[in-house]
Image (cartoon, rainbow, N blue to C red; front, top):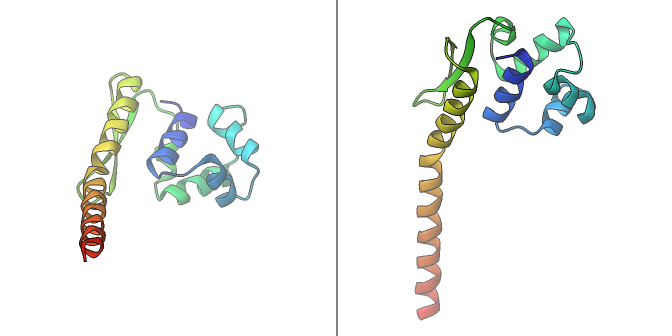
Length: 126
């Protein structure tokens, strides 16, 4: 997986928009979009800044022969591992992992909404 794809994937995993990343990096949204499209060469200071935003090692952003996968454990900590398979499959796995990690949050939100609606119904019955 290319460095630019890793940056895009990490941004998506952190649920940040391109505009939010551009703001964090003190650059224009179009300038940041060029980074993710691989249309600009990144200077060392920008690479360091991106690694700091994602709280990862700079080496994790560098291109490698092997694929690269990001996983979240039960504590929502990111685990970075080399993945020697198809990078498209690694990307799909990451999307599925992210969906699963938010399942519990969605269930709690649903339960809270149901309880709020029950309270409203009880008040309306009075």
